[in-house]
Image (cartoon, rainbow, N blue to C red; front, top):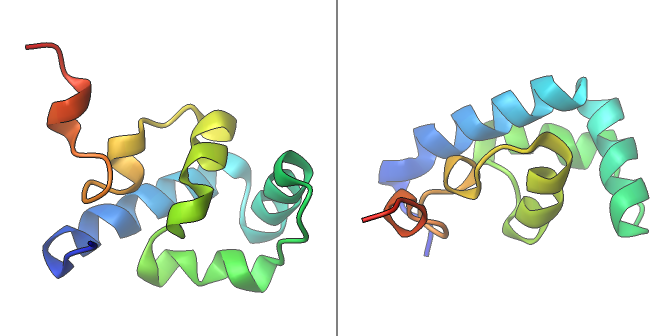
Length: 84
């Protein structure tokens, strides 16, 4: 379950991912190509306020090489990815 506590981190991760992918239109095109689904720039633009939609985390991770915990710390806690 997504918490408000991690909302700033999700937004930061989304902002960084969108910057790496070249903006809304470019991100939409890249994600559409990777998934075979039609993704619009308007849909991607919503991520700047809410974080990346959970179903797209793996695709965004593959495209940007950003760690999953940076995209959504509620779903992918950083501690799960660190060596003990």
